[in-house]
Length: 189
Image 1 (cartoon, one colour):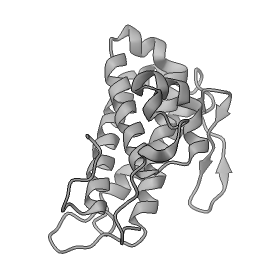
Image 2 (tube, helix red, strand yellow):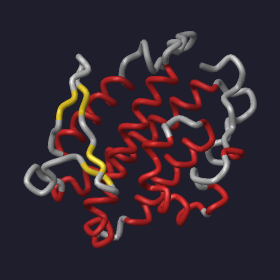
Image 3 (spheres, rainbow, N blue to C red):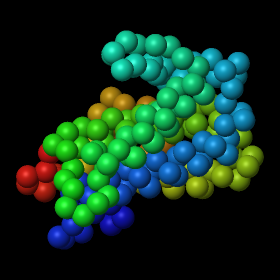
């Protein structure tokens, strides 16, 4: 119910509010454990299953960077994007761009990488700080939003499929049937 589109609410507005909330929570969460994520300790941006994430610059060039640098790029890109009034409008009568959903997809994919890295490389510190319940809640929110609106490619999310199943139960796992995914309302792009 947390991610169901309420009747009468604009689909893009709903995506924007969830994207902003997830960005704020993941950014704050990473800030609490960032001292453990260093260039020497995390020379690559990795996730479970030997997954390595490469950064794509503005020209589309792939670059291997240390995890703190990758995460800084993600947070900077996201902050710049959500602050851009032409992409995330806040003033009455301003419209979302036609590319809005694809921009949200990119942001959520990048934020998913950050969460995957935290689980893979820093869960011990998260648990020692007593923050695992909060991390699990943020991950559940991201996962449920993705399941409801199919926003992140399954190849990206399969690496945390077991965790998803453990936290949400097999009936909502992305590895089960896609009958739980709600299509965006007609006219939404």
